[in-house]
Length: 225
Image 1 (tube, helix red, strand yellow):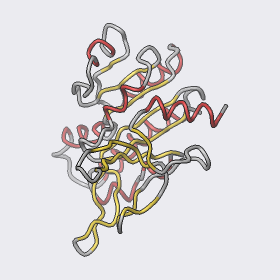
Image 2 (tube, helix red, strand yellow):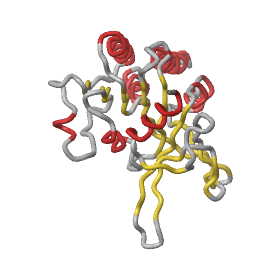
Image 3 (cartoon, helix red, strand yellow):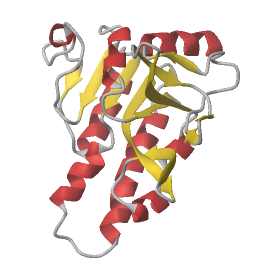
């Protein structure tokens, strides 16, 4: 079973830039949005010629690529950025369809991606980059969840529940307004807002770590041996 990790957070909080900490010779990126990676030198590090960057967004093709990566490469890390857009793009392609069955199918297709990753070799780390959206009560933010297509889909399948690790990306500011980008590693509260992070017991001592997936991989290797 591969190590499945969700990196959840709002846009601009450092999810994609955390990829720069990974070794490009050991990493493959599935780029569903076909966007440029937001760190210096990324074009030369990740590209189609090196066969470590694939711009695909259809769930069945993503599954096929994942299976090939697991069976036919020596990659140690796979990043699906942003994984939820496999679902969003399929939703817009099927926008004219009526009825609720398509929502169930959308959830099922996304579940198949995660299920495929669960079946990959155990030395492979799969990072699912996902956008978060606010959970509100009485017009106040109380927490965050995965941004999907709607409440019906949320009730069908919650990705956070099926992976052992969720890192929540955020920005902290010091008293001079200088930002620090990082990941929450454990469930906690910032004021009255619940942070939906989790990790195996004892893997991280810190509640907030740098947004560096290379550091995350190092801690996982130390933990699992």
